[in-house]
Length: 343
Image (cartoon, rainbow, N blue to C red; front, side, top):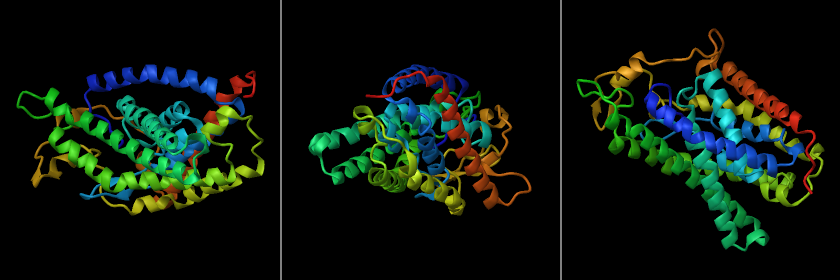
């Protein structure tokens, strides 16, 4: 679901980036009001779950690959506003260090995965919880809400990405009539993106969300958005050990993401897109925007490092990503030391 560099026009990237600015401003303001200062560093752990979830590629229908995002999961733990910030920072690290998602397309990727996914996913969760008895509902109701919310959130986010891809050839063409950027219109992009997500990726997202959410509910129930807003936070201590252990286990298991063959839809390189077959026909040309577009040189492209075994490089990438996220949110919490604890 990561939109790469040069698949969207510069105008499209600018519009999507501008659309995210008020969202980020709102998210920062509300998170500062809602989240106790002592929980801000733990938001780095939530971002780490998203970062790691996106490293586990799974094969999708049609020969492409996909992954979980964890946006609804973070919303369940820290709230949708905090989730927006956490996923945005995870996406930023992926773009500038690992080349996963375009830097110019950062606003579009955040709109889909850091805005639509967590806010919608959490809204669906709350509707199901309210219908099931509200705050006194059974745990099963919460898990059903988490599953349905994350499934809906991911699939609508995928639909948004498909629309962003699909409008490019309608708006931007060269003198010969060829697309300048993404060459596939809505009739191709929407089914190509949504069907695999409806059948596979959405299920993976739901399973990932419920599994982690259930672990948190059993081992550290105060580490949920509903409890954070209404109760004084308890000291973390040993209760968070299972969560940290899960992070470590996910890091060690990330090479499983290398087993999925193929390229995620819409993430082909300029050197291969001409040969990509859609609806039984190869594209036959390379869009000028892809052939001549801007590309950033990143430290570890595609989570790899020249001369290093790909499994080792993948694990190292996971360690670097998680460490940076934890450190960043720890640094973010420092100026907040003067804030009062939640009552």
